[in-house]
Length: 287
Image (cartoon, rainbow, N blue to C red):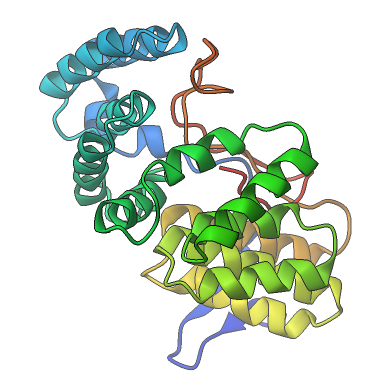
């Protein structure tokens, strides 16, 4: 950081200062960005839909989400959760249609809509097997790391063009070398903007760990100031920069954000959406 407080200056003139990052904390609040989110009737219907999803009553959940959308047509959250409901009942085509609508409503990202849309499109085109993305969603909540890693390796051994699987492997890898291999393979299969950003954040984390601090700051600064970055990637990049500038004393973790519960199909779906950043834990995106 120079005497003016600038911590990153891009070749195209983009800059990032300490004041831009020093007070950041917590998650991206996707749910409050849209004006329609403030309509109490829509919020009530959305909550009832999430409660129905928590009880595995997906048809009721879908009905509530559709009612909420009629009251708040500009609010992506009910559409996002309806898409996830269709994903859980095995209707990938409808889920893809709804995730595409979310992506149009929120072009800079809304939780993991871009990730879901990319992988469901790959499934439809036959690039990856149908059902791959739902497998990944379920693995986000596997508590046994060895089981999760084995399942993820099985997925990529059959088809290497699954960016999310490589991202999850990178997050779970115990050593820098294995992290970098997974990161490289994930970046090589044309990931969506959210997944690409997270992989680059992981790369910066590894570089910082290897004392390549300037390279790490360059990667994070590019992500934080790139208008093509998703809101989540921008936010996490700035948090990671904050950590690098402040020095040791905590890493970041991004909690699973691709579902409304803990283990799909087992009556524990209390959380639709999610997305939490805890500044006392590792930079990860487990979902």
